[in-house]
Length: 105
Image (tube, rainbow, N blue to C red):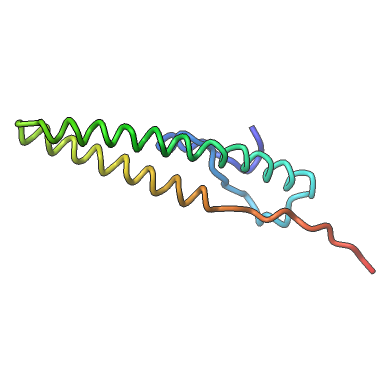
């Protein structure tokens, strides 16, 4: 596990949680964080696709459900899955620029 990340159980990914501003970390630490984050980000589209498939399955169940309470539960589950997708996509769009090496002239 790389410093600066915590596991988000709801999203099933490690997300950045820095203890100090990013530019206060050593260059090698920042590069390691960026590399790790890119690895995590690379898995997000697959997670979104699986959640979308689950939503589709639940929508099919709901369309045939005659029990109102069960329909409400399914609708709530669908809303939660959609919220997870939204949060994952927000994280997916979060990109940390590679740190530049400051040079003294």
